Amino acid sequence: MRPLLTFNIYIWGVFIILIYIMMGFWKTSFFITHDLFYQSFSEQVDSESIDKFYSNYINNRWIGIVGIPLITILRVVYTSIALLLGDFFSDNQIGFKACFNISIKAEFAFLLLALTSLILIEFVWHIKTIDELSLVPFSLNHYWCNVNTPIWSKALLSYISLWELIYIILITNFLGFYNMKSWYSNLLFTITTYGIALLFWIILLTYLSITLT
Image (cartoon, rainbow, N blue to C red; front, side):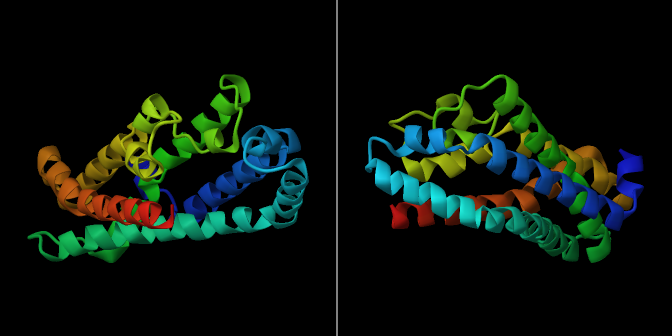
């Protein structure tokens, strides 16, 4: 793990953003098709409306691709702030630069998620609706989600996943290179900082889902 942590932070940041953009372009260009729109909305609206939806999607899909770097940066900064707040009250402060480096290098977990999702969609899953494209593999949402699952619960079920576990483990390991504390001590620190921040984020998403649906 040390080589990843010591890898140039700017090169790493550009690398993961480019990978995300390429995968986003691939998904929006080759998976979200006109037929998929019909399969997703044919029971809700007429064919003319579906044609308009698809046309609007084609004209504006670049917005989603451009938004990928912004979402990535916000996630890294959000985690960095959570770690920094805990670091401020710790007895062995490592500073924002270290917290940011840990956060962006731990992004490796979500890079694995994106790659795994793309591979499964391409070769394993048989996608029938647009909603299925957003399923997080190896998450509770993946295994338990069905037509009767409330929309508001999907955020919670998506975040309870293998990838969040890997993310937490990476942060825990990376912290050890800076503060020289025990693994279990750093795990507790990660859970009480990033874990609480994640819980707050899930509650916010759940509230918005309930409010808007």
